[in-house]
Amino acid sequence: MLSYRMFLKGSAISLLFLLAPVANADMADATVIDSPIQAAEAGSIILRGSSSKVLQVVAEDCPHCPARTLFPSPGFTVLVGQKKLSRSEAIRYEGQAGTVIYDARNGRAERVIYDVTEGELQ
Image 1 (cartoon, helix red, strand yellow):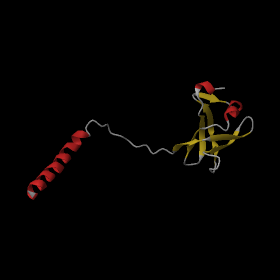
Image 2: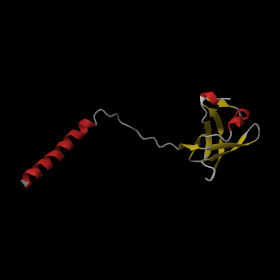
Image 3: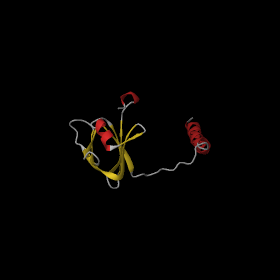
Image 4: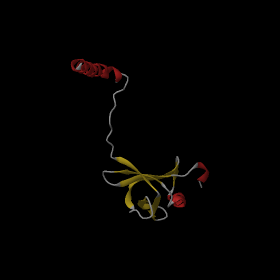
């Protein structure tokens, strides 16, 4: 009885090794992209600077959490949905939740995307 069980066990394992390539035949080759561009959600995003230029991006997840401050990249943009905002337009959305896209290599913010629904657009 014991040898019969071992035979079944060995057969099942052999069958799995034979069928594994067939099971994965439909899967396309995948390439993992290790990108330095990262995204971080924040409960509050504040853009510090002058009325025409952003000098710092301050992202805070909660009132008692430490804030993360980033410097903007040269091509820094602020978006609400698909709409690109000027600095004067972006002031209206400061303090609202959103996503900061940044380069992990240099810590510079590439863009801020405020989480605003279509009905809340100003």
